Length: 148
Image (cartoon, rainbow, N blue to C red; front, side):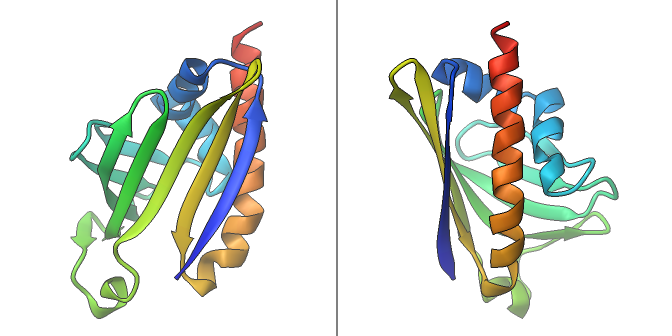
């Protein structure tokens, strides 16, 4: 497993970035870089279980490992969801789980510096290095447009 890091400076407050990143309607917009129709089910409260799903309902299951708004969010990915059934026990899932996805928001002058650290297996590295910059560019546009 490898940890990839992505970051972007967004000319908006940390609270604006946080809210835009996690609101259901804007979440769907910026995560479309990973797959059109992405959405989540669950709560962003620490300890809550979350489903990160595609239009067909398949995706990943995670736990909110830490949530300190508007500065840090840590997701602990536990497995997959397929046909409505969670898989957190198979040999394939055990080969990579848990995997973390951490969001850190810090002040950068008049902007917010957003950094994402994400654990990935080799077969997902190329996909993530292509999708994350696109997702962050969309999130930046959404956040900076929210101020106008």
